[in-house]
Image 1 (tube, rainbow, N blue to C red):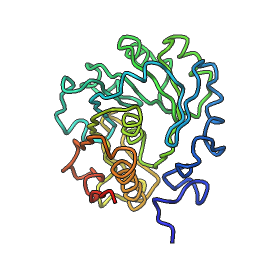
Image 2: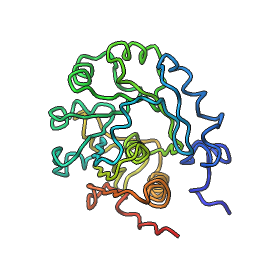
Image 3: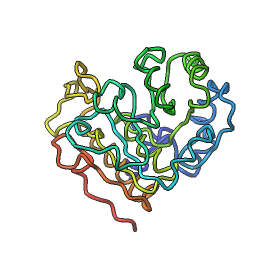
Length: 265
């Protein structure tokens, strides 16, 4: 029987964590280079690997061999007292710029989804002032929005598709990005999930937007499976030679820390 970890969109359905197996991802037609064609106004060549397809923006090379902090919208971003001075670079996502502490830090790379107004004053002011790299991995609004943004912050926009597509938010993808771009050490907070007694459709606190609650249409059991896949993927595949530290360990909602470590065979 095939394990959940080994299922893909091609062999099962989109509730699986991976689009394809690693051996065929680079040239897959399910969601690969074809998905990024809408961003061909970005002039860099596409790099295709077994785990990621991305536009070869020269600035992405600076993350190699560096120590990176990933901050998601889960509660442990506010719960853990992280110090930006301990890291070479910070990665975050979506409405990160509304978080009081993050708004005063330099965030170097962000992944943005549909919910963010790319022409909003607060967003544009932040990414312009801080020379932030803005990435699009799962953006389903008009590509014209990205084109306009690229005109305003030239050379600071990139696109990508990751083989890992867990249903646990954007922040886990940032951990994978940091690893795949060659980071030596990756720490993360705000990559949490829900508490054990979470019921489908309930909401829990959001670290970036005070009036927004984190909610999902997926049951806790599926969320747990996807975090298990994420941990196995990091520890046995892409991150086995990288120092990866979960700063949210010990928090009730931090699912990742409740999953046993995986040993490399």
